Length: 342
Image (cartoon, rainbow, N blue to C red; front, side):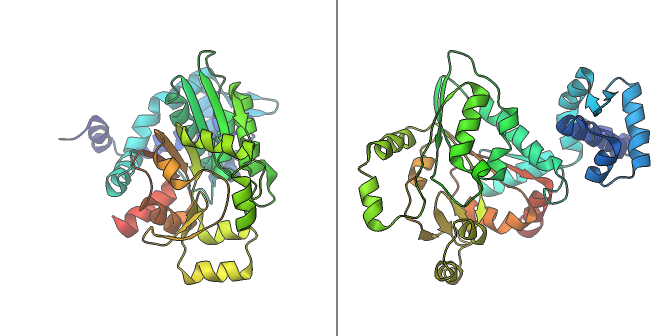
């Protein structure tokens, strides 16, 4: 039996492309506001003439407003975006695509946002919005939340909101320092998330690469003992999925280490573990941070990753991903996975 959205699409097939186009324009304005027509046209790969025509119609309907600094969504526009989200995702096939990935990889929930991470800058913002919504909807009472670094995880920040005074959330850095991008470090992100939510946070100012002697000595330090206790009782983990080569380069790994990873067939990295295409651990760095077995014990695991270039890494990690994982990705990556493996 046809669902209502399917019946509507069969009866009025010409309506969907127009609905999808205007929805995408309005949603992009909300995500990037205030924004000018030229910038919006460049972002959506449309002509200024097309943008002008469609935004004039949206303005006449009271869904957007044109101000000195650019276009912004009205409250009615925001309401329309939220009310039509499920319908647009259903008609575009994103809902069905997400369900296919859920079933194939045994994940708790998959969300596929429209667009291509590599071509549309709003996709990263959409990923953050969806991930933040999933996180906020699962906060109940006292929570310890472990957070890794990276651009995808950082995208949640602008969508986090102050929590109720009765809730007690503590963000903890899931790993020490990695690379040189301070804004994307776990320590920076837990401080930012905590500030956005009026919550507490704990940082871990330790390098990721430690000698065996230094590693054993650090395990006895009071600060490390405290962090390990937090990891043991973490309720939620928010993390990205990195390709093995990308993460090794970010860690300033030596040519010898890069050669070893290549020889062992490392494809993906998460929590300091490198996995091959079958999901087997082929390398593990000596680091202070949350361990894979601690992640597996968490009630909620939110993974955010996008881009077709990360598909191999995603598929590798899915072999070992906890079943309670909520995965948020983009349309381009999801379709690539579906075409290759489903």
